[in-house]
Length: 124
Image 1 (spheres, rainbow, N blue to C red):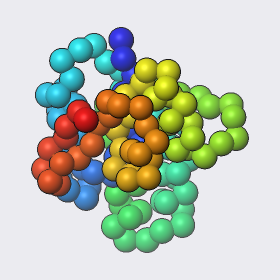
Image 2 (spheres, rainbow, N blue to C red):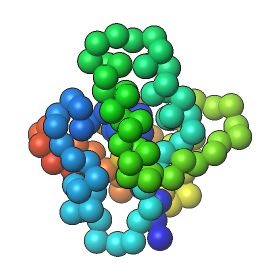
Image 3 (cartoon, rainbow, N blue to C red):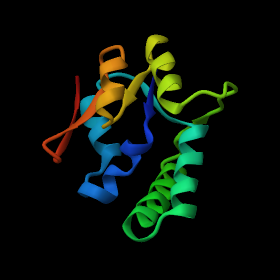
Image 4 (cartoon, helix red, strand yellow):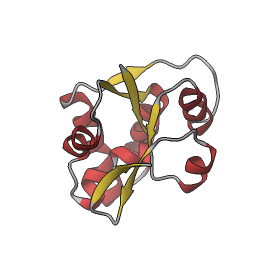
């Protein structure tokens, strides 16, 4: 079973672009997978809710609700590293990373999942 780890910016897609990332992942993944987020991603979403206003706060709240509703597994991290560094490590261990972060995409081991044309997800 392959882990698909959702980056913080990725779980905000449903609110920003009105795309069901969960059904899209199901469409492109013809293998057994488990959706995951890092505990630091949850922390980032809570920080957005606490510090931001308006649509960013609403998007982060929606993302947390979706993570809970879809039973996305939270991976505990022990190291005090940036989320991007932890995602790169997971990518090297064989996990698929779902992200929109341009800088992170350059560091990830292929394949990874991205949003194309603000309409659909693709495995790159």
